[in-house]
Amino acid sequence: MAQGLPTWSSRLIALLERGLPSALLEDHERRRRALLIEGTAWLVVLACALTVPVIASTTEGLGRITSLAADLGTLALTLVGPWLLRRTGTPTAAGHWITGCVFAGIVYAVSTTGVFASPYWILLALVPFLATQMAGRAAGHLWGAICLVGVGLLFAADHFTDVLPQFHDPRNYASTTAIYGAMTILAVQGLGYLADLAKDEAIARAEDAAVQLEHADLEIERARILAQQAVAASSAKSAFMATMSHELRTPLNAVIGYAEMLVEDADAHDLPDMRDDLVKIVGASQHLLGLIDDVLDLSRVEAAKLDLRRERFAAEEVAREVVEALQPLARTRGNVLELRAPPAALVADLDRGRLRQVLINLVGNALKFTARGRVTVHVRGETVDLAQFVVFAVEDTGIGIRDGDHRRIFEPFTQVDSSPRRRYEGTGLGLALCKNLVEMMGGTIGVRSEFGRGSVFTVRLPAVAPARSAPAAPAAAC
Ligand code: ADP
Image 1: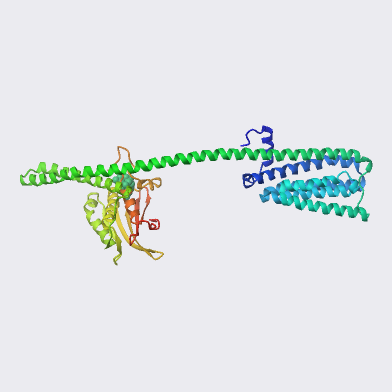
Image 2 (image 1 turned 90 degrees about the horizontal axis):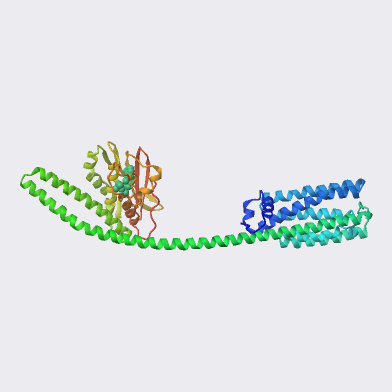
């Protein structure tokens, strides 16, 4: 910012800008005007202060008192300009105000020092220039017109009446004209310099912004390429996982089949030790098959290759099936597992199998992360804007989840505790799959949990599955 400007100019600008509202500084044109208003105000104040000794030495009596009062009054009123600028946050009012002060001061000086014989009257020509710089072209025209009217009135008052006083001794004209002439030259020079400074500053800022824009463009391009690569990598990964899962399932099914046959043989030949080992092989293989199924499902969802079926069924019936199927697991962990459903049937038109899979995952997790506690599956209907929803809430009194992990757990392969010493088994796939399946059915899934006290996972599904492009259900407030 402002590179290339001499340091003291930057310091001067920083000094003038101190306390200005940021909205004023963000726009180049308004900032330029604000700088000119500040600069003009302080030049006028300086000029008025320097005028005091001149007035004191060139006037006397009533003339000295009124001239000093007018001079100090102009000085004080001009100071209102910078305040007005900060107060209104726009240059217009402050620009008009300072122009008005200068105009009034000059008119006073002209009308009390011989009007058109006065050395000051030419200063009126400065007024429209000041107004244009500070408050814009329209203000310049307005103050140009006001000055012309002022000149006309001064002429009339001087020519046709005798009302204007003469406080100034014409013998001092030479010296005062020299003093005010020099001050005017310095003022115009100062303002011109300030205007130039503001312009350079604006150009430097614009160049800076252009460079930043170029950088931003490059960043966007880089992000686009990365996104393309990520999409390609993701579909390659999904295709790989789908193939691998399929290839793993076939031999694993064979292992399970043969192991089950061997269990029967062991029974027939009364070999209990071997039977126990074979049952363990069947159990471990079925667990592995479940995991492979999850991977396969997830990769199908990600590759948009999973098709949903639709059938009409009673929602609470699916929940009841799941609760009954998982009762043995609940007992092994010392948990009470129960269902709370409304008496009337809640009819849903969804993929029953996929809904069952989601509930098994959620209830299975609730039982896994709860010991000697309670897991309750709530089923209820909801109507939002005439649309019917079925809501399943799986509530447990288990270990709970910390606030920061609520979102994370729905990402694939994410577990709150992923350390090698973790207490709970799992792959971190279940919730990611649930989220994908629920969203495919047009629904939402969410969690509310208190660490150490328990969790509630809520699934909200439209009673009738929408077409894939239809909007999802309102977020699952748990
Ligand atoms: P996992 O196979 O590890 O259970 P999930 O995707 O089903 O994978 O769950 C991801 C993680 O979310 C779990 O490892 C666990 O940290 C956390 N989690 C899920 N359900 C619960 C629950 N009911 N109570 C506490 N933590 C849970």
